[in-house]
Length: 322
Image (tube, rainbow, N blue to C red; front, top):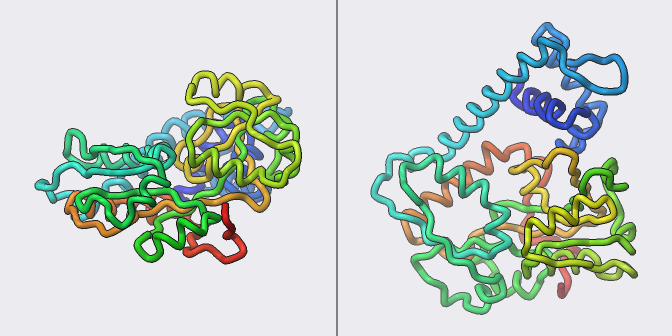
C-alpha cells in the first residue's frame, strides 16, 4: 500500500469524483479508478458505494477516511522534519533575510510555513519584497547577507542572459487556468490558448503574474485581462461567476490544493517560470533554509518533480523577448 494511493483516495473523498481527483493528480480517470480498486483490495473493504450517479463512502470507507487523513498528515510532517535533516541541531542560526518578489512569496508560502513548523525559532524569516526587474537591475550588487529567491519566466531571455550561472534553479511551475463552480472549462483536462478569446479574465494585480498572463495571451485576438485587482475578496467573487476565469500555477496547485467546486486546467503550450536562488548563499541561516528547500522538493514534492521535471536553461524555442 503506497502513500500516494491513500492521498488519491482522500482527494476522491474531498472532490466527490474520481474524474476530478484524477485531473488534479495529473493521471487518467482509468488510472485513478485502478488505484482505488487496488486500495480496496489491499484493505479488504469497499470504500465507496457504486450504485447511482453520486459517489458516496461506505460506512467502512468513512472510518478509513478519518484514519487516512491522520496518516497523511503524519507522513507529511515526517517528510518536513526529514527535509530539515542535520540542520535541525543548528541552534545558533538567526533568521533568514529573504529578498523575494510578491509573486514568489505567494507561490512559496506553503514551503515557508513548513520551515516555520520544522525549526525551533519564533520567526525564522525577515522578508523584503522587491520586483523581479528591480532585483535584476541591482545584480550583481546584491546584499551579501540576504537570500534572493526569484521566479524567472522561461521566455525572458534578457533576464536569463543577464543573471547567467548566478541563478541556481530549484523548481519549475506552469501557468494554469483557474475557474470556479459551473465554468464551462472545469471538466476539461486541457485547453488551447485560442479558447481564451472573448473570455472574461480576472487576475491578481502583481507585476510578474500580469506579465506571465499577457505573454500567454499574446497573439490571441480578443483575449485580454478584464479585471486586475489586489482585493482577494473581490477576485474570489469574480471567479465564482462561471463566466470568469483566472490563473494560478502548477506548484501552488500541488502545495495548496483547490477549494471545493473549483478546478485548474492545463493550457496547451503553456507559460512556465523557474524558481531559484540568485547569487551566492553566504549566510549560515540562508544555507540552512536552502538545504531544507531542496530536500522538501525531493521528498514532499517528489511526485510534482516527476510531472514537471526541471530543465535549465530553457530550450531556445521556449525563449523570446517576452
